Amino acid sequence: MDNDESTRLNLPVLSVRDLAVVYGGRRDRLDSPALHGVSFDIAAGETLALVGQSGSGKSTLALAAAGLLPANGRIVHGEVHLRGERVTHHDRRRWQKLRGKVLGFIPQDPLGSLDPLQRVGHQLAQSLVLHGIARRSEAREQAIGLFDRVGIREPRLRFDAYPHELSGGQLQRVLIAIAVAARPSLLVADEPTSALDVTVQRRILDLIEDLQDELSLSLLLITHDLALAKERSHRLVVLNHGAVRETGDTATVMSAPRDSYTVQLLADAPALSPDKFDALRHARGPLAAVPAIEIRDLTKTFRNRWTGQAATALDKVGFTVTRGAVHALVGESGSGKTTAARIVAGLSSFDSGSVTVAGRTLPLHPPTTNHHARTLQLVYQNALAALDPKFTIAEALAEPLRIHRLGNAAQRHDSIRATLEQVGLPESILERRPRDLSGGQRQRVAIARALLLQPELLVLDEPTSALDVTVQARLVELLMELKQRNGLTYLFISHDLSLVRQIADEITVLSTGRVVETGPADRILSSPSHSYTADLLAAVPGRGSFRSAA
Image 1 (cartoon, rainbow, N blue to C red):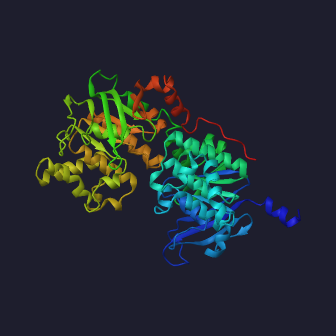
Image 2 (image 1 turned 90 degrees about the horizontal axis):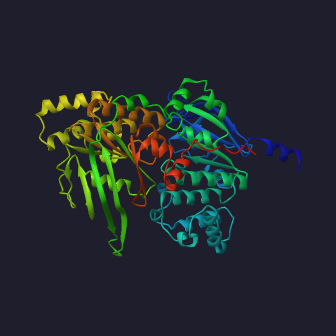
Image 3 (image 1 turned 45 degrees about the vertical axis):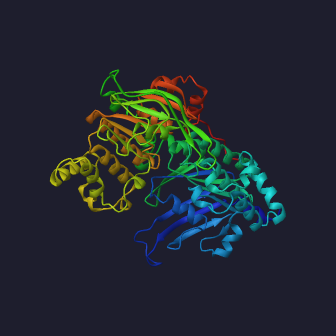
């Protein structure tokens, strides 16, 4: 090996120096940069986690490092070197030679990152041909081999599937196969597991670690999950408003953070602060043994409109929600959590069994109009989809009051203003529309809309899963305070066991439509009686150890 080659191999795989990125505006303007003064290195075989709130610049940095900034984004200062080569202002042609072979990229949204009109196997095969890894005649078999390598079951069958026919975990594996097909030196993973439940997340991250060992990959892991970063990285870079607030060895930063922003992030991470809401949980004293929701032998099937085949979503499900409790309904994607929530909310029919809400027995086939909306309200996971984009916030909040003919215009306005104050939102947002608000603000609007009818029960379907840890912590704190102040009962659907451990009084665990155990949260979390629950708990980030760098 000559001296030049030896020097190149000893250089960082990725080196970022004093990087500044702006969107829009003139090339020489730095008045509102998305990134400014960012510097770090990633060594061969190392995993560096980039953490921070939404809007901190994490994804911008990933896109800049991979040469994927959108047309209105540009690097205005600083440099990016990839395996010793300065790539700061490479054009598209020069990036094509590096992307895939030197750098692989796993985007956050797998469904939005694959062509919906092409079979997933064909998309991987095209990548193999494009990078000169396989001739067209060999590409299919090599793609099937890669699918098998990344753990896609029945790879020959999945080769011909369209993206919408695969689960989130399978789609993420397809993107990983595409990213590592050309055996790159660096893998950039932008929130690769944020939409996945904990067991699928663990399998995906274990797969990436195995590929790191096999291919000597370096990894830039972008995440807002501090517990995941603690478990899966060697070093941390903490970003806020586009600037580095802290950097260093992961264990050191986690145990002795120097920056106040890092301290706050760690305090807001559910897995790292399990006792955060204990004072609010215990303030109301012991629960009275009065049922708010009773479910017995609940069965629900869905029938395929083309084949006529029936799939069982809920199979003789039974559990009781105690009045005044936070009852968590947990399980993997596809376990039946949301189906149960919609039935309890009177939005879906069921085949057999009984559902009683606040003493009222629900019919098998609910009417079009929800007659117990003033007793129970459902808060959806995606507040943007649940709010009419044409309505102002004032119109969205007034709608349920008008439907139920509550008060005159002045009284409705007073009620809306008081409810906004409860959820910590300013009156100034009333003339704005949902798209003009942040994710946390939209979710608060959705909660305010539910509270306006003064219900006894809230069904919360993954209300914080799309939020970063700091916004999530503020929202959960709000929910706990509202519960105590208004005497509410929550049916809280979540796949986040760290969050459940913070807030739940009772837990029901669902697996493929069946209850595997139900009871007091303390007992289930400390001594689960079913192996499925134990597996869910074992998959919570922050419980495992991380391999040392090569």
